[in-house]
Length: 392
Image 1 (spheres, rainbow, N blue to C red):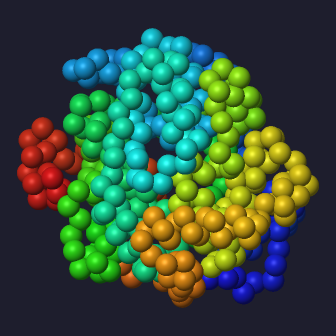
Image 2: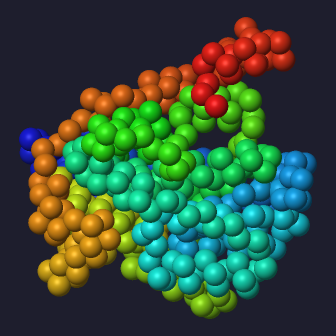
């Protein structure tokens, strides 16, 4: 899936034609940093952070669960979710921290989670995904040839959060997602992780079996329950703070003994393999290019420094070999099999059954919910609609 275009790199960030969908204006600025700067300009207009956060918390406090929890917060041991725990622990709100163990946790990530919740006295719920199904699903995705090999983990993380929120009747789910460190990520580098219909088909096609224990969620359920029925709402508080990765890291290390695990999303050993070996070697994609570009836009990293960091970031042969050995052994396959999967021809994920049309429909029409709510009497027809169109 390499681009046939002449090579070009953005004059402001470091995104380049390794993304075949990238475009540049007359100044040589790419569409990603142009959009990111406009978005951050809007966020920069937010000057009264405390009042905005207090407004969010006031809304959360209106809907306590039976157990008294105001919100769920997903925790991975990473910087973003750990810093959020620190910020929100100082507010009058009861949180339930939720960690989903899909079998790939790094030691540092687990230590970070335990250190944070114990120091802050926050309740922790750990959901462990059945490893045999997880392993089979991970191998099925490798065989499928699609670009996003992190779907099995990501889907498990978010579907588990949403299912627990519904089970406990907790209306708000807090996410560490933020524009400051994640403002740039090309869609061509991976498909949606939340398409349960596609996930089920890939598993069945390459195993001949049905998923029984793995927590699957369908986009139609997700959009229906969040957009239209208000069963739960995802909140991203870091978007309303002047969030600095560097400052957050220093604070966490000082107050909680938080340990850096070597890079964004490396709290998972499989994600480390996916980003350090699989994507660069199979598709010439370096996700650090997008990560560093996001930090450039946020003013935390200079362009020349980012270029230098990127040039020095390639995994060395010893670390590569050890990482491949770890991944292959845990999956129960040989290193050669793992390498062969990484050489498969690119397969467009759309050849597998999917619900991508729903994402396009929601993203293209901000008026969709308002229009639908005007023509449907929810109180009268809600049960009928759910029975017809939404799997339970």
